Image 1: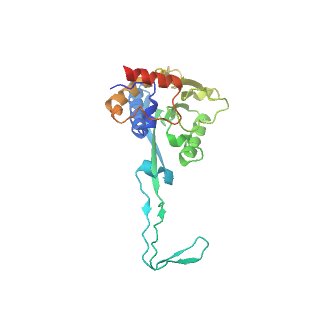
Image 2 (image 1 turned 30 degrees about the horizontal axis):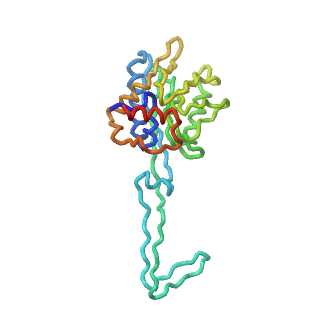
Image 3 (image 1 turned 120 degrees about the horizontal axis):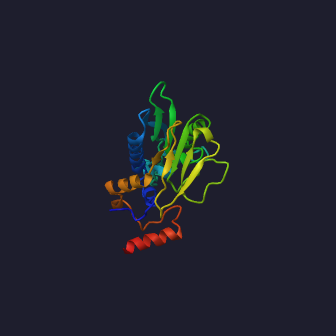
Length: 265
């Protein structure tokens, strides 16, 4: 079954499928570029990882349950909030206290990079598909990606930044971002102070974007829309998506109208 949206399906993010989708999209981007890149280049995937403390609000999402306190036996003493000691009455039932354990989860984020095949195999272009953690200010994922982003933008490397997430905070830029929720950014090594940004939408197919190489080689083309459609169909996302649920941020009026139209069909 195809997605009802001709562009990026917002329910992939909203229904908890982003981790699976991100991994599959990285693989497809790698395969596409590896097939079309000239012989003087090699295409590789990389991965960065970091530990994140699982907050209490994220426990259900990650499948963790807080530990349950033990009901105190008769006569058991417990400390009061002011540092004193409360003595239970003989027939008093002490209610358990729910507490969250200290849990760290390892996050891994994959990316694609194009290297020069000869010599020192220097990095030519880095392709990033942003994850939710990259768009959460002051989080480990945000800080780690910002360091990499700054080093790429100020170094002799081209950056492609694919943002297909509706949630989170946009990457820092001097100019305001377009009003579109999805954006595809291309920063060429030689003109990194003037990035090109293509707005993307859920109701229109994503545009082709250029992938810069070294001069005099022409750009490669990256067509994300067929990749997204293939992932949706092969992974049978329709079986895991509830299109009646409310998303955050909510869908726009034209997206709601489109979804209702597709449902009638």
